[in-house]
Image (cartoon, rainbow, N blue to C red):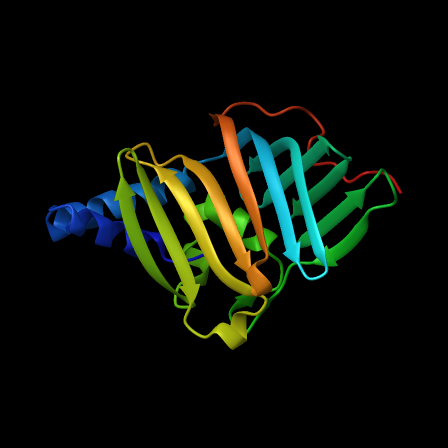
Length: 208
């Protein structure tokens, strides 16, 4: 996900604001994200893979702490932990030993979907500017930002990133990561809490 700043500026111009006002609102969104030191919310995650077919809806909780800590704890229907600590990614399923991966960028492309989610909270996903074309639609109190890769082959299996952002509060409501074969991952956030103390130990790596 990338260049939401430019996309929101285009939205502001589209609803009749001046270029200076549009840039101010886009800058305000990026500043809002950069000023987010902690964030947590209840989470509904949907994982849909078309071939072989797999569809799993999970409930849980998401926590973020600047600059690079992110934890997704799923509890229903099965337990799962996805933990980001800087450049390290840990995934633990059914309380088994956690698997460890490295978050890297190759030729400007993130290697893990979690990097998009982390980057959103860090600075509005300006990390990966230049990889996507953006379109924005406005409906009532939300802005929907659709990002599509400029070069699809380079970004496979990623096909799109769609974010729904409350307007003008800038709070994220949902994110949908579109993948090949009409597969996707969605994250829906509710009961958000920003810049509040987080529970102790939320970012600790589980013991092996």
